Amino acid sequence: MTRMATAATMVLAAGQALAQEPIKVGFTGPLSGSLSLLGQSVRDGVEVSFAQANEQGGVNGRKLQLIAEDDAYDPMRTIAGARKLAEQDKVVALLAPTGTAQTAALLPFVQENKLPLLFPYGFSRALTTPVKQYAFTTLPEVRVQMQILADYILTQLKQKKIAAVYQNDDFGQDAVAGLEDRLKRDNINLVQLPFDRGTTNFSGVAAQARQADVEHVVFLGIPRDAALLLREFAKLGWKPQFSGHNALGDPQTFQLAGALVEGALAVAVMEPLDSEKPAVKEFLDAQKKYLPKTQPTTYSMHGYNAGKLFIEAVKRAGGKTDSASLVQALETFDNVQTGLSGPVTFTKTEHAGSLSGAMMKAENGKWRIITEWLKAR
Image (cartoon, rainbow, N blue to C red; front, side, top):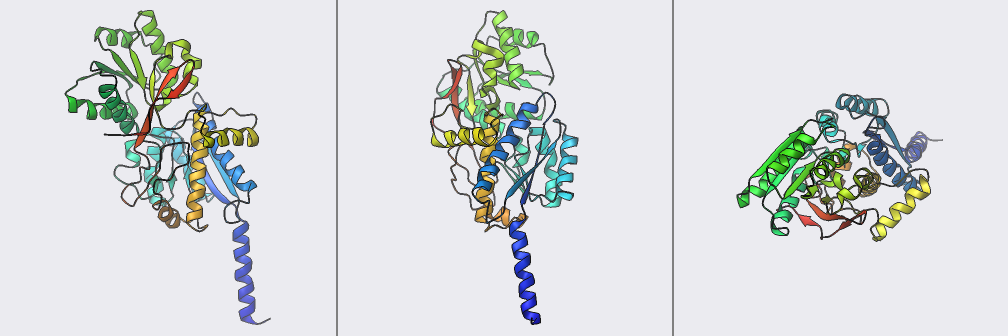
């Protein structure tokens, strides 16, 4: 065999080996602790999308492999997990990492290591403002959600006496800033009632809201805390219009608060689970098929959606998974619609893929979308 033929054979063999190597993707999130449902669900959704793709031959002949690290909702563990995934597991990206503070904490690491951080379940403004070369989001940050909600309250509900009961951290403060951005344009003052994360007694906050004589309470925290606050309102015999960001619109809010949540409003960033859209049915059928012992949630829908978008990026990159190729491919996304969320667009100067949300209402034990996808104004 000639030297040239030998070299050609070696190159061919190397190409075949690469084609057979899985595309390793990393995930960090709370797989244990009080928020384990959130992390496990997002992870499950990604795994379902990968299993579905792998059954069809993978992407460009390569199977997809998700490697998950539990951070127990602790930002320091998030960074440690990401470092392990990058340095030991050699993942090509972090996909759908979960937690607002946790994903924001990852930014210095992913920028330094040129590791794409894709479609997190997190709502920090820091993820995309200013633009980070390796960070791409598909969920409208909470500030954007609150601009959409405030506009709906003013223009559709015609309400002006509004209070925000918010978790007193970066997330809650970002949300309040979004509300004020829109309310100040109409010279509306916002009553601000912060509470510490981990609080279990909301009687004081409820009394303050009642004394402020507001007609609308925007709640910014986890569904468990929303249920606690609604119970305190009920004790006072008071039922103001209640609303919140996307987390309020999870089915578990009904499990926690029951009929007290009826009539509440939330900003939808994903289609509800009982939507009749074909894409939602496909997702539900896929989770039942590939992870039959798990329960579909809006969180797992986000993970599934993230997996679908990642697969699309790899296809657009011609099967290449280096950081530069993935970034370049993502920046070609123009009004990409999965049927599970609002349209997604990325450019070189904008990595916040969605600046829209829809309003949904709690009715008869379910959340129902009552508007089209609305852009923040």
